[in-house]
Image 1 (cartoon, rainbow, N blue to C red):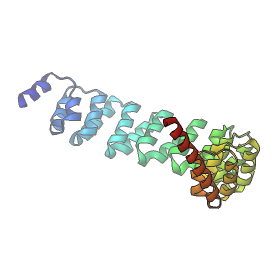
Image 2: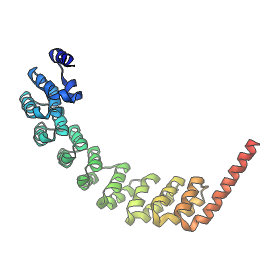
Image 3: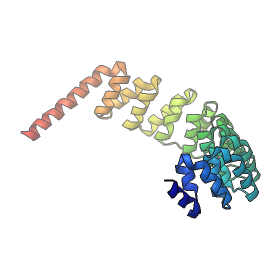
Image 4: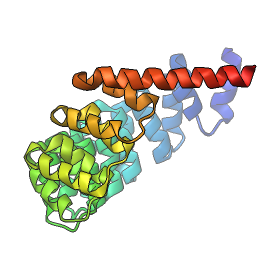
Length: 273
């Protein structure tokens, strides 16, 4: 009611709830809040929710000195002030977490924020983050990574996400005692190293999951991987994949699957007798 609203105006020092949740009263609440010596947080709420008061609240916020979190909030939620707020944030030397917030939440500034982080001596984790989230900067970040000591997992990220660097990353991976699973992405994505990776997998002894991955993802090796899998006591799922993906082995895989299903059916009958 109007009487209740007047009560809130008179006594509630923090009108942000009205601004954030009661759209018809936002402008009036914003004006009241501007009269009450608003905090930065109050002004940020006005900037986001009360467009007619945005310029006035922004001017007041600049006078009071916005912090980095407040500027990030405005960059995300007030498009008309985004460029100016971004400039102010850059003046405050944003750290990796400030820039990650922009990368994740403000698509128009994603590449610019990524470039800024690349200038700051990024860690391996930062570079992997850029590879994942800032597609235009993937190759640049990947090249920086390849100049460093990398784990096999890091190299797999490069192989999966950065086509021009796949061969270089694959060669490094082969030098670093890769596990069977480490070899998966290289065999799938690096045709020039596929035979070498496959031979290494065979030397190390592929389990059924390794062979199943090859069957499902690497067409040139499907027949050989399928033949190998048939020798390793395949289960129903293994046989179903061979039937689906490896046409020359479909008949023999189906016979093996039928035999397993008959055996399981017989066991069930015995148990239920």
